[in-house]
Length: 178
Ligand code: SF4
Ligand code: SF4
Image 1 (cartoon, rainbow, N blue to C red):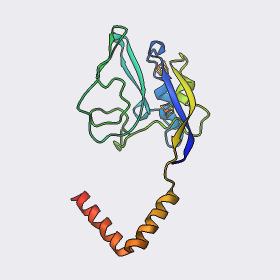
Image 2: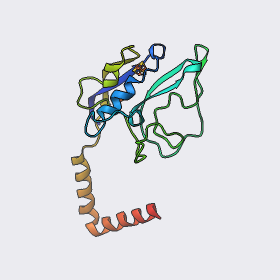
Image 3: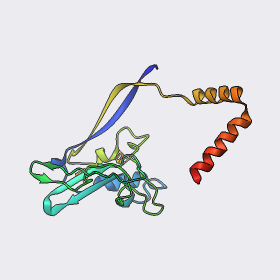
Image 4: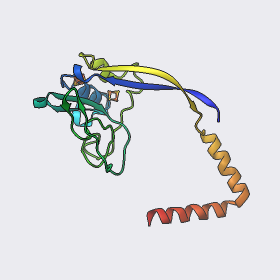
């Protein structure tokens, strides 16, 4: 399969520099408000501040993939003698917690790296430089384009006939829903 270059975007988090000010949550939720900048509710932010001031724990975590089921095993990290909560670094929108869910609809939230902006706004607003944006290029295998899928479908229809394909799809959807 052909290789293509893909841009990988990363936000590097320096826990020692974060003081839990929550400016990142404010700007993220404002940027994604509808209309843009019309509100700034941190519950709608795609970056969440996991904080426990008594233990001096401040962990900014930005939202990753949605997962339908919570995982069976949990990691617990101890870094420089400081113990962090289970799931403390996890980026998943998962059933075990409220983070990374749109508060009204419950739909999962995911960081989109502030699509359309020159750099992520949480990085720009973090005056402590706890968040640092990095970009790099990696060679990856080319994904199937929609055109390839259409061609694949066309050849299946040519080979088996449209009725047969529709019948299989109908049976698949019955077994999935039932
Ligand atoms: S803006 Fe920076 S210092 Fe403030 S909570 Fe977010 S990551 Fe931490
Ligand atoms: S990069 Fe943008 S979308 Fe992602 S957490 Fe930061 S402000 Fe939110």
